[in-house]
Image (cartoon, rainbow, N blue to C red; front, side):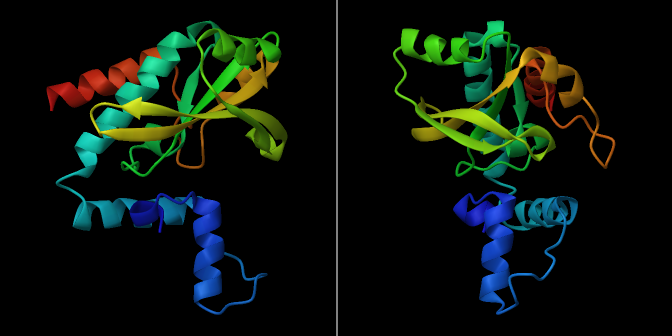
Length: 184
């Protein structure tokens, strides 16, 4: 469901429990287990297409990160971790001195967006600005979600995950990912 339908881990786990006829209170596997299964599925069934799709998504993310550079953008989610396919959305975390400034920047860029509240860092509610951006490489539009945080949240956002990895990358890190991919 994550690879073939573009579902995020949470909704995919809930649907899997329902399809298996398990009670809603059944503990689903943690995200590390799901990510390992996604990587295995991609290696078996999508190895010929996924790398190019991931590269296109990372380029589109980089484009938006450069446009929003003043908000210290960080790429997270499947596009950062390398498990994204053309069905995956892009998640950028912005760290702003004034949280409304990101919204004003989108208005100035002429971007039609939808504001909403989602669960963010440390399971706290955060404002998200969502829109669709065209990807010439993929020939379709991709969902882009800007999670808007206070500048003070940046320090806590850089903590490593359970596998010791950086859970998100800044502009320089995304450029390096793309440069490394170009060499292989």
